[in-house]
Length: 306
Image (tube, rainbow, N blue to C red; front, side, top):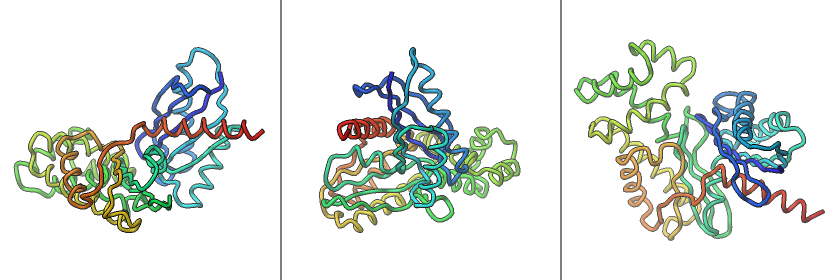
């Protein structure tokens, strides 16, 4: 069976969709992280390969992978794109590979015309286009000077607030964070975050989300602050594109969306305040499936050109 594979990869996981030549999804699975700026290029390529192996393993008959589209975080810079493409070609010899950023996939799923996608996962970024299809992006360049409002940012802020706070809310959040991380004290958390911060801070986000939904004022304050920063990111992009005063779809995507009723409401409220004409929603298809459809279209185009 000839198939194409679509990948949506970031700092936490890699989603994979297998699609046959008719456009039917025949398998889905998930592998480890594949953001090369966070885990290295070889490890990122291995994450993509593992996701592919897990996906095709459930199929009942042998398959031939004829095309791949991979939307991976950390590949926006030209030098990162070139190096990542090279290591993917080594992992998938002879397969046509279309490498994009993870931001490109949800934007491709929006209707034609002006649109913005706000991606909030391990990192954060926004990408958009104007009526002339000119594309711009904001953020998404790593936690050192970007990724505001992301799971990493929220988790890092929560650890700082919980360990320095002197309220019941801070004590409660501290106990939950330590228990969730399997750490007896903050010194153990410091040691883990020093060696691999991506294994610590993004994992704290679900704790903050659940605490906010349960009414913890400190957790709610952290998520409100993140929502304000994310809305500012989207507004700055809309102004750069010249569409801030227009009606356009604003799609939210990423692993933090839909995890907390409080955070979802706070983010929607800030986005409506910052961009009152935007129509807030979600991509119509998930990112990995969008990538698979891009791979399928590329195969069809090449075969028609023969």
